[in-house]
Image (cartoon, rainbow over all chains, first blue to last red):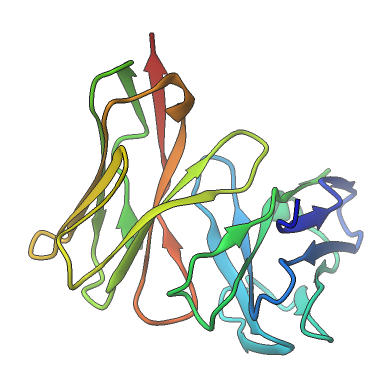
Length: 115
Length: 111
């Protein structure tokens, strides 16, 4: 189908390693969001892109987290020097319009485990 | 500070009966509310939404009610079906970019 895809689906990293998580949004969707979902919690906002512009990164928990969307389509979330508290499912979502008032379509997520 | 709260972590309902999932919020700036459904190992799927200018929105078996004065919304599923068994998340936004999610309610519909 033409939904949001994420890779890898599962990632195990040793503490201190850098990881890169990829998101392929639905073609033509303007907005792209990253969320972090800890076990037993709801998704928590990390950052938002409108096309290639990162308009909001207020949810990124530390400067170890970095996201980019250089051509306004595929996005990468990078976590440097991973810590155990980074273990979570990282969800990517895209929407056709600008901002949060349009339906967001979610990918299946990447489950990151830091050992 | 949890701005969107789902106080029931789980709910069990018999097939054919009504399921009622509740959600409370604290931020009066929220003006758009959504329900998402999530199966294991999948991302959340949009179910239904409601704008703050309405108090009810219906889509087939799913109805969302909004009580702004109480800062409360609820999702009604009737009749409930086994395929409805999933985790349901309430989310809210206030004309900004981000969705604020609750912690979810696990619904189990048994035969």
